[in-house]
Image (tube, rainbow, N blue to C red; front, side):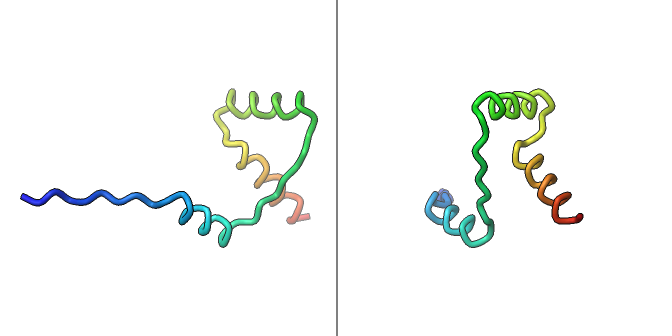
Length: 62
């Protein structure tokens, strides 16, 4: 019986897809604020990106 070959998507392929599909938005905040943000997101079980995306959506809707 033949074993099925497992394939993996390379990091380079994923990076190309992300670059083509998504725009990166960067923001620098004081360390304390960043740590508090990460901690609260972890506490609530909410992805950090979800909070930022929602803020951008609300801003654009105005």
